[in-house]
Length: 195
Image (cartoon, rainbow, N blue to C red; front, side):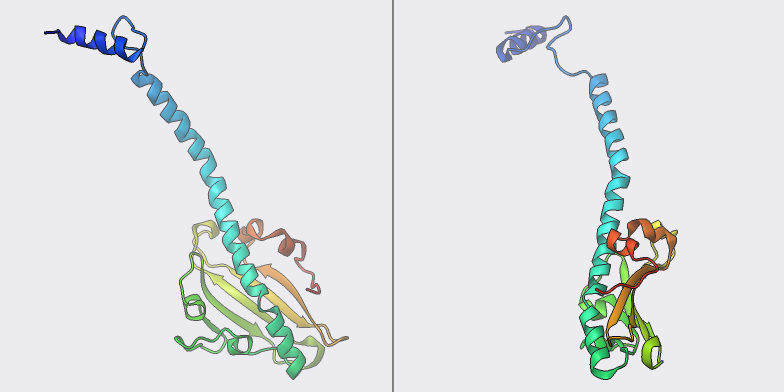
């Protein structure tokens, strides 16, 4: 029969591990704690960048949803010489949820909830001629990144007048959203462009 010390010595020899004075070599508790502390530091440094990246992707998704309605706005304007007044005019009506004329919930239009967007809609003018405009928008939920306030992303469309076309620009309602907006939108800030 072997004593506990002899069993330990045999186990170290059989496994091919070098032996220390106190037993088999391996990681000490201090070494493991240092490794865990370094890993926690790396995660703490990477997490804000990751959250920013995710938020930028969701904002970009909102802009692409708005951008997908450009052709409907242009078609409506060319066929009726007026900008759309209701979300049904651009295909944002829902069979399941009746729209409220100028806005609807994100779920009512797209059939599922979204992490940051809660409402889609439009605001426009009733003017005739060159001064017609319409703002398609998506409203955010109250977000920590926006100081627990709501933000809006707009795709603004206006009649160009000279060639009966429509020009677009994008904008946001809160300065906290500007760093999250895609470069294509940030470059157009304050300028209408032919898209």
